[in-house]
Image (cartoon, rainbow, N blue to C red; front, top):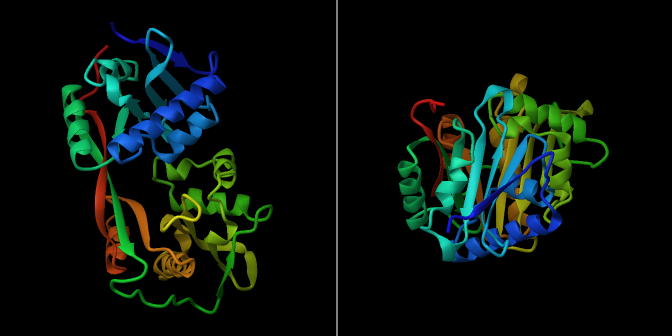
Length: 310
């Protein structure tokens, strides 16, 4: 029997119980598959039951239990919507994934996370839906204990370094982030509510958000490196967001602030560090490779090769 689909939006938002069921499902799939099916922003939007530009689709079994889930988000500045979906391991290959995908907009771009057999299964699923890969997000990593040494950070004397201060730097950091990622469909559209969500997470640590500022005016941000350790107390850190003001590019700030973040993560006694970078961001990929990062896995986004009809 096909699942019952239930759309949750502004008129019919997710209940707390439904959000909890979806997050529990995602955790089950992570344990079974070895990689999370939902990325951070999609997971946060589920937890907060967000309906601002976000729709949720539940696949329910006969008892009303959540056996599948899809979320799609309106794309920023005219970009196509993006989506992610997950199906409970015990009920796969029963058409639930197809039913969820059919409930998404025709021009949606569907993310696949994971590697190995999971990536192959996702690619086959996408091909069966008539979708082709349109974007690749590389996960790169390196040891913080061994491997090639990175050079010390070098900054012009007109710059100083300090940590993010809640209540002081939110607006300035959001402006820096928006300018640095003006052409990035996800990161560049980060809003205050999104920042507040992340600052409420257990892993948030203002000391891990490193700012390069004007020495003469410490409220003027030139670059930043937001590092992350999730779960807190874990052994792996993340180069979460590196941002350089467009008018400061070409001064070596990106490399310098990246190194400052690596120094910070190593000072915490962590074992490894990872990062996510778009394949077409050639300059960033080269910078990270020169700092000893290597590919770990690749996440892909799929879309129709031609616009959907009807």
